[in-house]
Structure formats: structure tokens, C-alpha cells
Image (cartoon, rainbow, N blue to C red):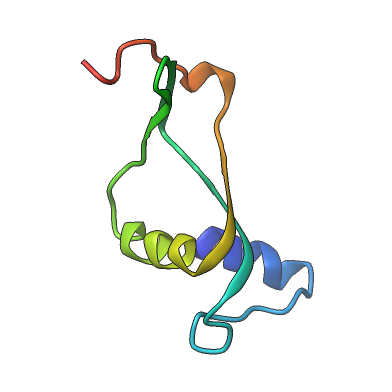
Length: 79
């Protein structure tokens, strides 16, 4: 995201892209809503302009970590 790039730049950390690094060890992203059900965890990611890039980054990663605040849990998102 644009905010992540600004944070990295402010900390003088290197910024790359998928052209430079087509395979990633790990990708970390968040979800807007999640529920824990018998079949496992279901989650909804928001739309918006960054969704295509987020999907590309997740697909390039060997390990995917999705974070969500406890307040984003909703028991009925699959209904």
C-alpha cells in the first residue's frame, strides 16, 4: 500500500516490487471481517484500488500471514 511504502521510506528500509522479487518468502496482509466455523476460518477482504496488487503479492509468497483484530470477528459472514 501507499502507506506501507511511506513507512518503509521513513525508516530508511529498502523498497522492492514483484519485478525485482517475483517469489517472496512471506506476505503479511489483513482482512476486514473474519469468522471461525467448523470448516475453518472464513474472511472477507475489502475491495478498492489495492486489491489486485495485494492478490499478486499473496500469490507470490511461499507463506501467507493474514492478521485481523479481534473486533473484526463476525459469526455470520458465510450466511
